[in-house]
Image 1: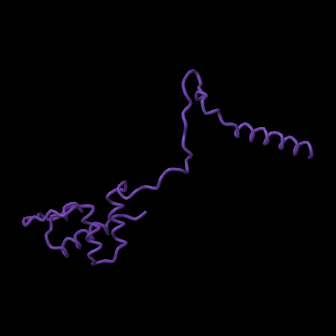
Image 2: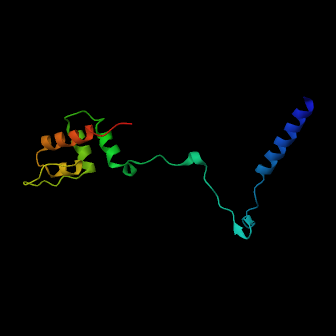
Amino acid sequence: MRTILALAVVLYSGAALAQGTAPAAGSPPPTVGGKPLVRVKPHGSAPAPKAEHLSVAKKLLNCLDIDDGTKGRLDCYDAIFPPKPNPKAPAAKGAADCRFIKEEDERLTCFNGFADKIPKF
């Protein structure tokens, strides 16, 4: 048991010393086969996804968290699909078509109808 413990201490201390030494500031970077080594960031250091990188469906689902029937929810939808009022707007076939509706209440109802149909995983 003592020999295993002694062996573990020697191996861990050797590994710690090998990792603790840094190259001098003026020395060239390490190479393999004449090519410089590639530095890889740790897996956990990736930044959190920003709102603009979310899919349209996820953005619409995020708007459902805002109180129903409020100006805030309509503003959230309008941020995704900027309104372009059209007096001769055809029937909405998708959430993007809701932006052509002029009346705010009707536009909100249209967006809610499509956002409620999105499956939540």
